[in-house]
Length: 462
Image (cartoon, rainbow, N blue to C red; front, side):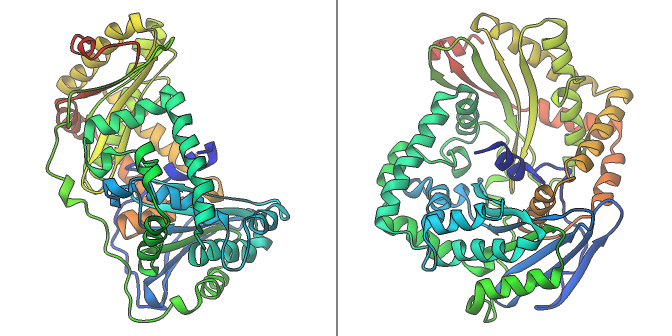
C-alpha cells in the first residue's frame, strides 16, 4: 500500500472525522444538500434507484477531482476458507474488463496524468482516481467499468496470486508492518478482525476462480456501493456520469445495505490472548501493547481522541517526551486508536534495542496507569483539542481526503457530520470526560505483540 493509499484509507477513520448526524437523506432520486460552509464545500447526496448512493463535495478553489467507488465489503466479511478474497479481488479488477484490457486501463489514465488505485480495509474496499477536473468523465467511466465488468479470468487469477503472495512476503520482511497484523491477531484472536486483510499464504494458495469471482458477483451489488467525488465537481454531472457507468444496474426497488453495527463484537473487552510473538533475529524489537477499545459509534470517542493525542499522538505527548526525549530509549514511540463497528483498539507502538524492551514497556505501563488514575492536566487537554482540530482541518486540504471522508461517513455512519460540528464536539471535550474514558480504557486487560529475538517464555517476563 502506498503512502497515498494509507492516507486515503485512514482519512475519516478516527473518532473526529465523521459521526452520525440528524440529516434527512431524502427520497430515491432526490438530491439533499448536507452542508455548505467556509470549512467544507457544498456537500450533496442522492440515492439512485437500486440503492446506490452518490455524494459529492464541491471545492471551487481547486483544479482537480478525486472520485471513489466504495464497496461495503472487507476482510471482516470473509470466512477462514476465503480469507484475503476481498484484497485479492481488489488486485484482480485491474486486470481487465469486458471492454478494456489491463494495458488499455493503465494507458488511458497515464495519458491524462492521473492516478488510479485501490485499497482494502477490514470493513470496506475503495477504488479511486485523482485527475484534472476536466478528466472526471474518464475517471468515472474507468472505475465504473472495473467495478461492474471485471472478467476475473483463470489466467489473471494465477498471475495475481503470485503478486499477492509477494505482498505477504514483503509484509513479513518488514517487522514494523508484521507487528501490526500480529497485534490484531493477538487482540481479536480467530475472529475476522483478527485476520490480516491480506489473508494467509495457505488461504491465498487455496483460492479458486470460483471463490474470487463468486465473491465479486455476490458482494459487489449496487445496494452495497457508494460513489463519492470531491474537488471541482458538480453534483449533477457526477450523477449523470454514474448513471451512465452503472446503466441498468440502477433499477428496481433496492435500498442501501443496512449499516454495519458489529453487535457480535460489542460485548468483549478482553484480548483473545495475552501475548503474540514472531521470533526473528532483528537489530530492533518492534512491539505493540494495547487493549480492546471503543466502537466507532461510542459517544466517548471524542474524549478518547483527545486522550490518545495527549498520551502518544505527537512530539509533545507524554510517551514521546518520557521515552524518546528524556531517556533516548527509542527512535519511534506513539499511540493509536482504531474504531470498527461494535469494537476497536487502543495501542502503543515502540521500536527499540532488545535490551531496552523491559524498560520501555515498564515506562509505557506506568504512564498509562498514571493517566488512568489522575487523568490529564487542563493544559494537556487543551493542547490535545487544538492538535485534533488543526489536524482535522489540515488533513482535509486535498480532494482525496475529502472524497474519503464522504465515503467513510456514508458507509460507516450512514450519515454526514459537517466539519464545523466535528470541531465543536472536539472543543466541548473537558478534563472529566477525558479522565473517565482514560479510566475505562487504561484499566482494561492488555496484550503484547512482539517481533524480535525472543522465545515465548521470554514474553512472560516483559
